[in-house]
Every structure is written in C-alpha cells, then in structure tokens.
Image (cartoon, rainbow, N blue to C red):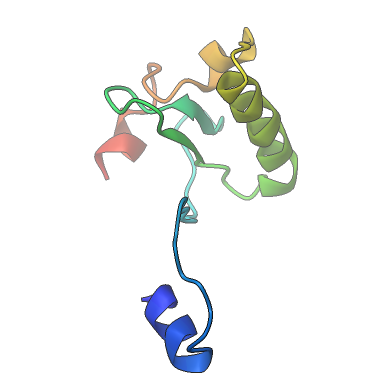
Length: 93
C-alpha cells in the first residue's frame, strides 16, 4: 500500500522494494524483548515486544541482528531468543 501511494504522489519514483519491515507494540510476560532469527524462516530476523523500552532495546537489537548477519553471535541472544520459555503468550497472539 505504501508503494502504491508513493507511485501516486511521485510517478517517476523507483519502487523496487528489496527489504520490508513492520512495527508493533507489545510486551512479553518476562519483560524482555524477542530479538533474533525467526525459527524456521531462513534469513528472517525479528525484534519486538519492547514494552515501552524501545530506545534501549532497539539499539541492542540492531547491534545483535547486525552481528548475526555479519556472521557473529552473542550470548545475549539466548536471553532474547524468540523461542525461549516464558514468551508463548505473546507469540500465540
């Protein structure tokens, strides 16, 4: 829809979209966001469930996901893993 609106406003704009993102607001039951690779979806990473702490956690998420894409890892990813225990209520919604 955004690409269609851009085309309507600026017909000469190139709208070849290589990457997309979305933003949501929610929190997890343990208060920690979900950051990292999406299980079963190769090359897809997510960062959500900040619960009002987006300034802090979005910076951390950017660093962690950037490192993953570059081939590095961090022990912090276990604490923020999307499939960790205690987050089933958010993932199911």
